[in-house]
Image 1 (cartoon, one colour):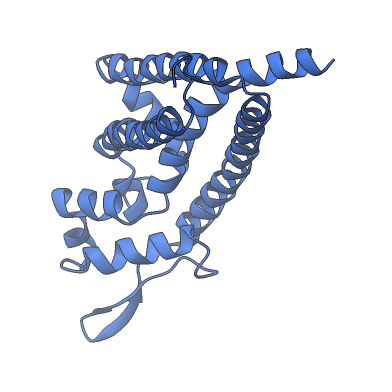
Image 2: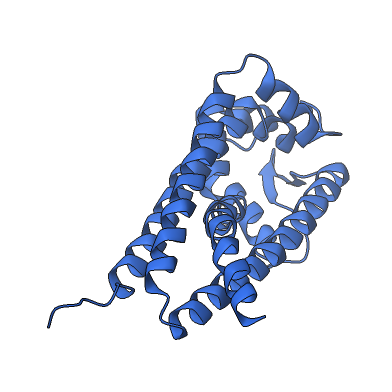
Length: 219
């Protein structure tokens, strides 16, 4: 039974490690302000909402909400000597749903991380160093396939328009977030996820390859 468990855990590493690396990247990016701010700066969309020049602050308010640092998504700004609210109720509901999904996926990735760590610990204690290294090589291969899939999808005509339409759903161009979550944003998010995930995968691989080495037959 113990041997079967070790075999199962070893093969779980092949899927769990790359999924965790890419998943953590995707989850982190949707909670950070950088992509939101970049999109607003590039498109100058806040000009249409009389809030130009406040891109950093608006992106910060979105990020704080996604990180559970505030309970409500809202941004208040001056408009012709009056205070106006930037986000509508539809946008608040959309982001609440998006944050809930991000939290669910974060929980799934955390469980996979525990599974991967358990597999590594069990195999390490059993001195199956070569198996860990072999499965990690397979995991790197799976991750490369993930990145290649993203790269191929970026070249498919009309795909990102459909993804964006599904992603944004109820929001239209009359909403700030309806303009933020555009095709360029979804493309940039996908590229950034692949790059950020590669960095995480590289760190994991470097740490494991460095600290888990087969026993040398020579002294």
